[in-house]
Image (cartoon, rainbow, N blue to C red; front, top):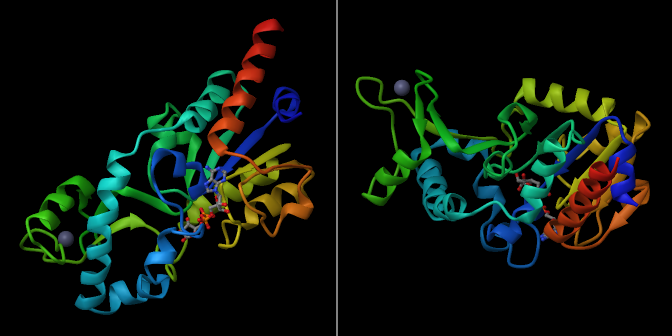
Length: 253
Ligand code: APR
Ligand code: ZN
């Protein structure tokens, strides 16, 4: 049924969360064993990062462990399936909460991926705005630097381009995501617990504007009652199956 809806929709938006990337080996946040099972999210807030050198040290200690997992991950069949829908002309855009760049690496043009929570692949100096490649910072961390700072003469605080708890959302991306959600006639949520706002408002915007809502998620979400279709299965398998059927129908038409 979901494939039929993708074929007949004018503007399909796919909204992804960490469950999109667990089959690429990246743990999600709220499943048993997920990141917030092992680390206390209250420690890794924007206030703590900005508030003290110790707060930044703790953040980079975690970042140093997580970044190699992100860098080493490969797009999974779910990412390739979403890119396939784009290639078939059946996708408007992806709105993602993920910071792993896997939608882009699976072949989606960057301008079709709205990264609501930023990207772990880039960093910048908060004082002079100089950009830094996260791989370069990883080298510093692995060489023993505990709190990376901007090159002399600046010496400013370097921060990854991810949105931390308590940090303002990127206004451009948020407005664009709201616009695309309201314009969608089919909105497919994949791999998100839909508990973090304002990201979790996007399916609400879509539904209110008249879109069909599909939720592909291993576990229940607070918006399941609003969904026109619930698919409690694997993101990768479900999306690969949908893309396969859409490809078949487009080829026959
Ligand atoms: N297939 C389908 N669903 C899956 C899969 C999978 N392979 N793996 C996990 N899931 C589901 C889980 O059941 C869970 O409901 O994906 C959901 C992931 O939820 P979260 O871990 O809460 O991730 P997310 O919704 O993206 O979190 C939102 O919270 O911590 C912040 O900034 C962080 O962007 C993140 C935000
Ligand atoms: Zn600087």
